[in-house]
Length: 257
Image (cartoon, rainbow, N blue to C red; front, side, top):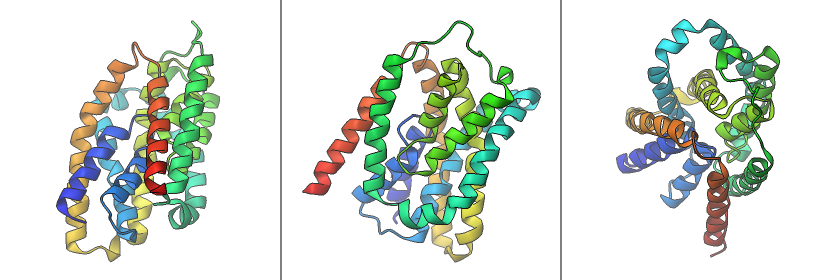
């Protein structure tokens, strides 16, 4: 991997992490376009730089996290099923699903169709939960289980969390913010586990590339988070569903050639 490739993947991660289009899926496809060899380091890189994007949420919501104990409790509750399922399936996912473009494209396509159908049928109720700290234990736990589907590359952690939250009667802005916050322990655990298992094999140069991807994804994600919060005030996620379908079809045509 070159420095330029690390920067490009960092940009892709920063833009896509909080959008319902799968950052992992996009990095896998981007790695294919860049013709990067499928190595243990590349898989770890694609997992670890996500923590850089997540750090942007810590910066933006730092004061909120310090003062809202109930919100933090809900985040922890939602993280528990994700941690259990993720730890159990880690080896299988990294061995058979990571860097598998076919899995990614099917997940993007089906997820895009599902997102469009959901948005066409969804109507927000006036009594919907309007703050993360007002969410119930049951809502948090169910969202954590739904988020676990995103262990499949291409599903999108953000999409799973947001659709799950909207289905449970949580306002759009609230569940989007909860998706941001839930990413903190989720990706911290995923990155920590992966580096614990593979970090000792990295060379000094590979650690440098990892640092570059981390910093770039953090800076780009700062802008992406603020943009998404403005976007959802007047838009649904149908455009993201269409985008997922288009990406899947285009890449399938490329693979056929």
